[in-house]
Image (cartoon, rainbow, N blue to C red; front, side, top):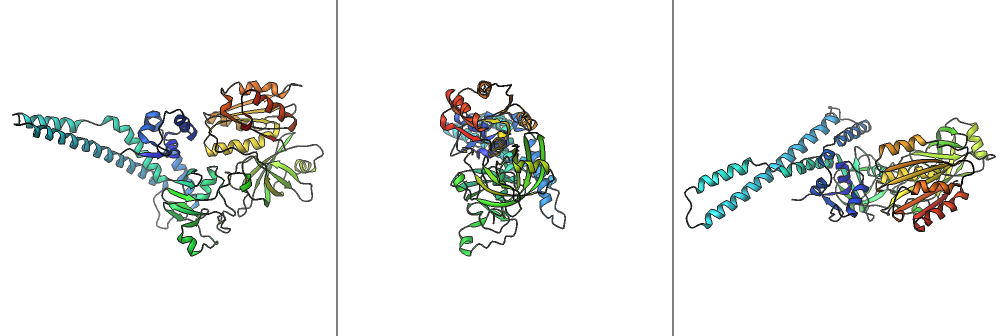
Length: 490
Ligand code: FES
C-alpha cells in the first residue's frame, strides 16, 4: 500500500529543508495528497545517497543523550539510550525486510494464481504443464523485487523516525512540528518557531491549555494549575507539562500577529555584556524561569535600569531561544542608558523590560524567499527574524546584506559567515559604505543576485534616514510595496 508521509518527516528523512520540498511541490515535481507526499515520490526526487545519510541516527543519539540528562533513570538500570536507538533502528530494518519479503511473496502468489487460471482455461493440459509451472515458480521465487528495495530502506528509516520523534499538528493553523527526546509539547513548538500561547511554562498559569483532538499524550511533569473534570473530559491538557507519545493533533492558541501578544512587565538579569566595537553593546540576559517573555521575532521592548530613563531596543534573539534574550544596543553619545552599560560591564544587572511592541515581524504565511538588509546595529532585529525563519524552516532562500557606514563594523560577521557556510540556502554579503557614498548605491550588489524580485519578501532595518532611499530602490526594481517591511534602528 502506498505510504504517505508529512512534509516535516519527509524533509527530516532526506536531510533537506521543508522549503526545498515546498519548492518542488510548487514546480509540480512532487505530488501532494492533502499535504502529504508519497514515500516512493520522495525516493524518486532524492537520490539514494542522501537517504543513506547517517546524520539522522547521529542526531537522534544526540537528542537521546540530552534527554537522558533531563529524566530520572529507573533504578534497575534501563538500557543505554544509544543502545536503545540502535536496537530500534535494527528492528525497523527487520520490519522493512519482512515487509519487502511479504510483498514479493504476494506477487508470486498472484502470478501463481494467473498461471493456474491459464492452465484451467485449456481443454486439456499439455504434458509438460507441471514442469513448466515448476520452472516458472522457481524463477519467480528467485527473482528479487529490486525496484522496491530502496523504498523499503526509506520505509525502515521512516519507521525509526516515527518511534524517535512524534509529530504534532496544531489546529486551526495546520502548523506542524516534530517532538523529540523528553521535550514538552510547548518546548518543541517554541523551538520550531511557533508562537504558541503560554505564560509560566511550568504548570502554574494554565495559559498553555490545549485540546487533544487525536493521538496520545503523556504527562511528564506535575502541575499546580488545576484542570476541571469537565476540561479533562473534553481532552484539555497543559502543553508545558505533557509530551506526545504518538503523532497528535491539537487545538491550541497561537499568536498570529502582534495584536495577540500580551504586554508584559518582567525583570530580567543580564548574564553578559560585550563591547564588540565602539558603536554597539551586546547584552545577553535571561528571564526568570517562571516568567518568560512572549514576543514575535523583530519586536522591541522598553528597557529600564534603576532610575535611568528607559530606552527602546529591538530584541535580537529568537523567541525559540527559551529564556535567553539578546539586545544589540547602539551606543548613543549622551544617552545615559548606554553610558551606564559601557561603564558597567559586570553581569547580573537587573533590567526591567516592558512590551513587546512593533509590527516588524515575519510574514509566516508567505511562500516567498527572503531578503534581509541590515544597516549598522539594525542587524539586531534582522538577526532575530533570520533565526526565526531558520526555526520555521519554510524559506526556500535567504539573502542577508549587512551594510555598515563609517566607524561601524560587522561585529557579528563570523556568525553570518557560519550561517552561509552551514546552510545551502543562505547567502551573506557584507558591504561597507565608503566615504560619502549613498547607501542605495550598494544595493545593486544585493539585489543583482536573485532574479524575479517580485518573488521575494524584503525586511530592512537601518538608521531612519536611510530607509526611504532603500525602499524606493527596492520597489523601483520590482519588489511589490506590500512585500517590503521597514524598521528604524532603535
Ligand atoms: S505555561 Fe503556564 S501552565 Fe503551561
